[in-house]
Image (cartoon, rainbow, N blue to C red; front, top):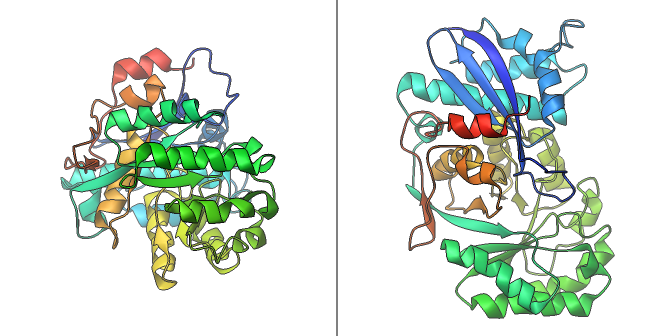
Length: 376
């Protein structure tokens, strides 16, 4: 079996302007086709036009060419070798950032092909599946600027059956700590002591001094982690959030490859790596990030705020992971987020979602939704 083509499809909800930090209203699908009648599917949380250019770019020289030229004609089952080939043959203009985003998508699609060809779900290709259901945690964004808005927005997650909720900080928190404290305490009081809470600072704080005053408040309200406290390049600032008794997560705002995660662990002192499988290097690189995390005694909790394609890739990894970590579950109202695949991930009474058991990713595209939102 050989790879015959890579197809890149841009999707966008009509009227979406990208004015807020939500990646669910547009999408970039990447399909890897083969002469064996198997197509691997993937998505990437990046800029579709740029991904398309990286896939289709003609050769400049032996270390600067598009991904299509690198993989077409190759055996799709040699997934790890193809990752190394893509990384090497794009090294002149790649190695980090958006080129790794594009490699991530191709890699996920190749894992999907491998699973379909072998008749196994990806989880069983990565290792021994240890769990068939995983706790879902829902990201509530925006949280709101008043106690009533906080309660109303959190209720969206609770109505889905979530038993773990991640709230998102706002820039105004750094200007009014007392008000931020009120919103944080409102969230805890509203959900009670048994719902797990986390917080994503997600660009709300520009320097450590913006967020440090809130750390004792998160500790006192039993928050499981503080995510992305600062812009990702401020690793020294990340390290300043240690010592408050609340684990610090990082990486979801743009780290790619295990090389950058090594720096986040060793310089930024983060406790939890939060790679996005569609950005950090795909499933192949996710396993490498996990290996360096385990060596350092750190955790891995994957990021994912896209569609059920990303959720399925994360479930495959987390189901065989050494710890029972939760899976991110976007609560976005975007139709693309909920309907892009025929399969759904319903939250059970235990707050958990099922791991796909079908070969590959275990999900399939709803072609009607693809055509509805396809950008010409």
